[in-house]
Structure formats: C-alpha cells, structure tokens
Length: 361
Image (cartoon, rainbow, N blue to C red; front, side, top):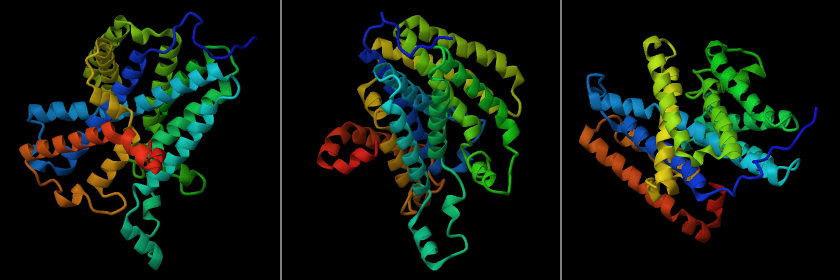
C-alpha cells in the first residue's frame, strides 16, 4: 500500500487572512464568553439564579457552550498548524515538539493555578494536607491531554494513506464521548491508575478528560477538513453547519436525559461555529475579538488570578462571593471584559518591553 504525506491540494491557494480571522474569532468568542461567564458565576447572588428568569436561562445556555468552543478551538488551531508544518517539513515536523512542550507548560500552569501562598506555608510546616493542590486536575490539564492525544494519534498514522489521520481523530472523538459515562465511576486506588483517575474522575476534575478531550479532537478533525478543502472560505459551508446544528438540536431535544448537557453542546456547537464563520466571511467580527483570540492563554491565566485568587488566594471570589445584584454584576463583567480586551490589544507592545511575557502565550 502506498503512502503519501499529508498536504493540501496543489491547486489550493496560500492560506488567506479570512482563515486566520475565523480561527481567532472562534477563540476570541470563547475567551470573552468565559470571562463574563465566570465573573457572573462568582459574584451574582443565588436568588437571581432561577429557572423562572428567561434572561438567566438564555445566559446559562450560552455559557454552556463556552467550554466546548474553547476545547474545539484549541484542537482546531493546533491540528491546522500541525498539518501545515507536515506539508512544509514532512517527517520532521517541529510542531510536534512545540505541541509537547506546550502540553508540558499547560500541566505546570494547571497546578500553579491551584497553588496559593498558604499552600507554601503548609509545605514548610509539613501539614498533612500540604499536597492538596496536586490532588485534583485543572482545565489546563485537560487541554494538555487533548494536545497529547492529537499528537500521539498523528504519529501513529502519519505515514498511512491520506485519510487515516482524520479518521483516526474522528474515531478517537467518538470513543471519548462513548467511554465518558463508563469511566466516570472508575476510581482505582493503586498506582499508576490512581494518577490517571486524577484526570478522568469528576471528583478530581471539573473537566474530566473524558468526554471533554473529545471536543478538542473534534476540533482537530475540523482543522484537517478546512486545511484540505478550504470550505471555510465558502458561505454555504458555514450555512450547512448552522442547519446541521439546528437539526441535531431538534432530534436530541425530546430525548434529553442524564447526558442532556452533552447532547445540547454537541448539537449547538455546529450552529455556533457556523454563525461565527458567516460573520467572519462578511468581515463583521470586531477586531478586538480577534485580538483577544490571539491571547487566550495570557487572558485565561490573568482571570484566574483576579477572579479565583490563583497564587495569592485572594480574588473576587473572596471580595464579593455571590453578593452582587444583576446590575452590579453586569457592570463588573463589563469592566472585566474591557480590561482583558485592552490587555490583549497592548500585549504585543508589552512583550517587546518585557520579553519574559513571551513565555505566556
């Protein structure tokens, strides 16, 4: 059986700016929705979190799409760059090493995000709970695992026929969602399986690798699709995604059960991607959204410090823990959004003046 390197069709033009805008717009939407969603969740009083409120229900459903979009965009951009590098450097893809390095950094950042100064005191005095910050995983760990999955699958089938890579990613995506419910109850007590359950059991992780890595793997499949076809430059492609999302939602809605949250996200995500793609093609995505999408990691880490008190232990979760009314909450969310947008806008300049900032990108 003959093999061929992964490449875009010869007739395919050079990557266009529309492609960059679409990917960054998707990431920008995810990070900005995350900022306002986490801000509202931290400070809004419980009495306003009612299912009788139409506004709250709409907000809650839209917020539910933030994490899937974030994972999807992470897998999309990495797979796209991976495939592009494979065309330029077949067999010696530097993106693989960069991806593994990024996964390692995300693992470190994930534990640091859970570390506070009072943990240092517990370490120094030998407190029994001194290693508590290492006993559960962070969303950054799940993203790192997703990148590792994408790379390992790619390495296993990169020399196979052309469609082996996307099919393998697709199979991994479906397996991730299928196995999620079966692995949730798995809680082994012996090493190394105990360490593995740190990233899969819901008691140890708010975003278990199963099923959340599946959204990143789905993004990798999408990255292969747009790299090889350039359909993302066609309006009908994104219109079809909108139609697919609506159709899936209508099919899933009557059967919502224990996994209704997953069904809602799987059906709504294509529609959301289609809408953002159509807006990108029309040039209707504001520049500040695109700039924010280019600085997701920096914004994410900063919001952990401000909202959840990463490192210091003191954040808005301690200052106004579910104490604000809707007007105050909306105002604070707007302040947070404007602040991170301004940061994203000026980060390129700041990196020139403070080179260490290049490590957080």
